[in-house]
Amino acid sequence: MTSAALTRATPSTFAGMVIIGGTIIGAGMFSLPVVMSGAWFFWSLAALVFTWFCMLHSGLMILEANLNYHVGASFDTMTRDLLGNVWNRINGLSIAFVLYILTYAYISASGSILHHTFGELSINAPARLAGLLFALVVAFIVWLSTRAVSRMTAIVLGAKVITFFLTFGSLLGHVEPATLFNVAESHPSYTPYLLMTLPFCLASFGYHGNVPSLMKYYGKNPRVIVRCLIGGTLLALGLYAVWLLATMGNIPRHDFIAIAQKGGNIDVLVQALSGVLNSRSLDLLLVVFSNFAVASSFLGVTLGLFDYLADLFGFDDSRLGRLKTALLTFAPPIIGGLLWPDGFLYAIGYAGLAATIWAAIVPALLARASRKRFGSPQFRVWGGTPMIVLILVFGIVNALVHLMSTFDLLPVWN
Image: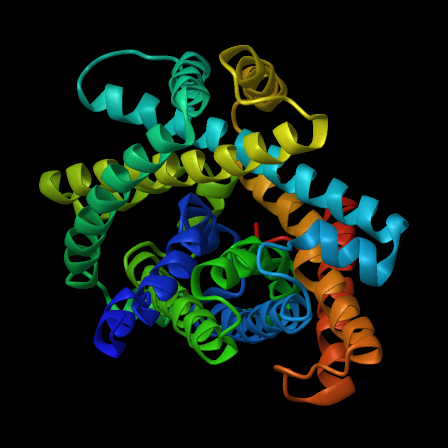
């Protein structure tokens, strides 16, 4: 094979950036302006940048450890070998918990947004019923095959990208500087509400399960994979900043209190934006975009949970085996969605709590153990021990913040 053919066969860096950015950006972004309304735009942007920095480097630490193993080795292999069975079980439980809680979150979100969508068509569809039917459709697609999920995800992702740019272009054109700078409040207080945003920021930068996948995609090529991680996470950071600008520049800070009190679900935020802008076309774009955002996140998360459970319990890929896996994947979150249909914000927050283990604490421990055993011959994250300590502290602080928030030990913007 000629060198030109080899060049053509090598996946582009852009493809890896899209994989990372597409994994990060999903329905979870709808929670950000609601939970960040207390800290408001500039402090929230600072929290996002800090979280991006820490989550990028924790992903790079996974890469550093992963490069010392065969292509295809993932969390299970690395964690068991470097940290032992106890940490491997803790890490496995945290991954399962995050995937289950996100599946529940998207059932809750799909029910609310479909209820709003059908309401626009003068059709009364209860949120519980809409979420149940949507979950059953996704379960059927996941049960069919991974290829069916891939094809459906490609369609949904393409539609999401188109509606994303149309929606944001319209929203940015309506931004009011007075609203963004919150001139209506004479002596506003922002910093007391900053800490509680961190677990939601962390949950909004989850891509770490894709690092071993990129090594399978590019081989042991750390330079390319590092560029993919930097580019993909920066893409997500930029879009989150635009989303905060578009929402906080259109909805007054005080109005977010009512949105949060109604559960913070996607339909409530869409209704608030529609009420402020009073634009029928923009309302339609928001509804379409939010539906596609939920669908793409739902498909990706449930496929990951499906494959994890199939591997964990040893279910085969026959129709009966896939049916067992599908029941185990969807039954618990569907029951949760029927009992608590408005738990989107709470679920995203709890996902952030569990994600601190496998997206912050475990990567730092892996990097430390990997350096002791292998010396990191192929790639080493800059910053030495202080960087490992920073990522560990970042994870621990996120966990503590969520626990403090759960027990009402942090101020709430109300």
